[in-house]
Image 1 (cartoon, rainbow, N blue to C red):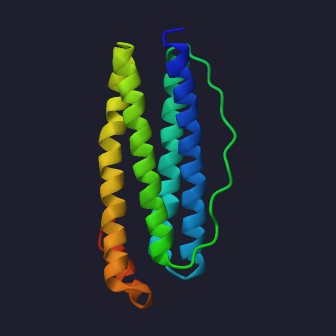
Image 2 (image 1 turned 90 degrees about the vertical axis):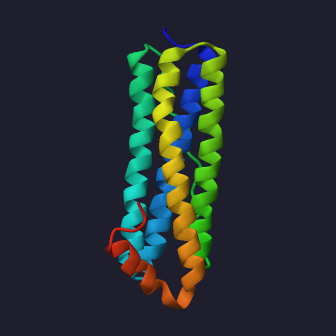
Length: 163
């Protein structure tokens, strides 16, 4: 095994967080789709796919270093939202949570002098900057236009906004 048991366990936990995020984004996308906000739905369906890809990066890495992949159970996502703002705020809060965990993984890799893991995690550190920025921008726009003018958010996304 080319990875410590502690880091291996932490990577498996991150797989669970990434899969949970994928499920949460499907729930958010479905909420927007049910409100005929197709571009917002499309954005979150795409985010869901990205989160699953992130989980698979961890799976592939663990397999590459002869680690042990253990897919954890994933809790049910929140499915009911009172507003677009609530849904987007939840996404932002989750991205901030994931960022904290990615940083914790990097700290652990540094402490263990696992340079391969540090190199692997470097991509995630950069990715989280983009993910948080996208959700912060989207939340700000949703707050500015309000619930009655979400069609303006759809127009923004149609013209390449939102990452």
